[in-house]
Image (cartoon, rainbow, N blue to C red; front, side, top):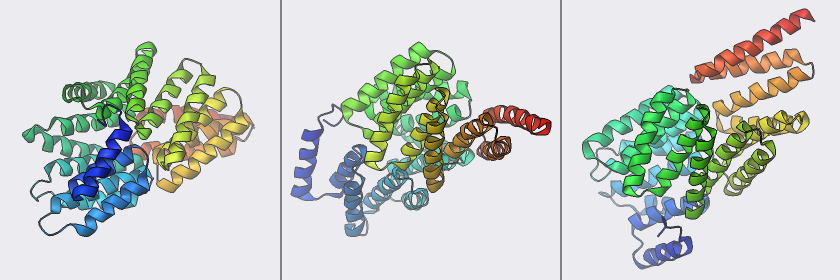
Amino acid sequence: MVRQGKLTDAEMLFARALAKDNEPGTALQYSRFLRSLGRFSQAQALLEGILQRTAPGEEHWKAGAYNYLGMLYRDQGQLNEAEKMLTQAKSLADQPGTRETTIAAYNNLGQVFRDRGDLAEAERMHIRALDLCKPGGDEASLASSCGNLAHIYLIRDELSRCEAMNRNAIALSEKIGNEEGLTIALRNQGLLLMKQKQLGEAEEILRRSLEIASRLGRQKSMADAYCSLAQLKAAQNELGEAEQLVAKSIEVNERIGRRKGVARSFDLLGEFQQAKGDDAQAEQSLLRSIEVARMIGDKICVANAYRALGTIFKSRGEGSAATLLWRDARQLFQDIGMTAKLSELNNLLGTSQTAVKAS
């Protein structure tokens, strides 16, 4: 019912089931449902209730609650708390009935490290999750692990590895009817096609991702799909539509309190405003992005915003400030392992330093 987008009916069924038996399994599924709608505080209350009432021998419920709490904290940009919760979930790996949760905890920890910009550790977590999937043949977990690895390879511009992993994620998600996982895999595929300059096919796939997320009522996935489509429209030089799409992403992310989404959306908005020649508005958007990204430790977002902000400063004759921003961006990209970005920053720094010497 949830997968079919019948959200009101689904919530009524969850509420009735909880009122009837108050089972931890029902509460876990209901918390996941609430999280997907962006109702984080309600989901958190349910999960904390599970932890308070689990008895000895019910560690599988406790592992599930820790895992979902970790996901909630990550959504809100509280990466240290997220890591603590997910590590707790992972520590219960040897308990009966926790295999699927353990795999999910490794994948979710990988996402936390990815948000911090530690791509090597993120990749290690996702590979561990993938290794745990293979003996058991859990196709949902396998699809998630492939999709997460595809995202890492996309960030690093390792496009052939990204494509191989993502095709697996799409095929498995379609096979088992997991539309929630499919919308994420389709978005990754759309971004990959954008990097391969196949914009027409990319748009078709990204719109399909948005359609599924909208039908399911998945707020996070909708916000991410709006951002991805905005990037596509900017690549097609349709900056007005790109701004409208990223504004929708900001609205959704702010409404549900998802700070990572807010930071990255403002980063994109600043780049679009800069491309239109509105440097004053672009500067404000980029500063807002940096403020939120620093708060949650999102190094990738900070580095991107520094790079864009540096070009604004350079354009108005503040070459020294631009150089400082570009140096910091280069160091962050180097620390993260995004080597494809380094040549661009080196070129910018070479131009900037030449200009400073001439003056």
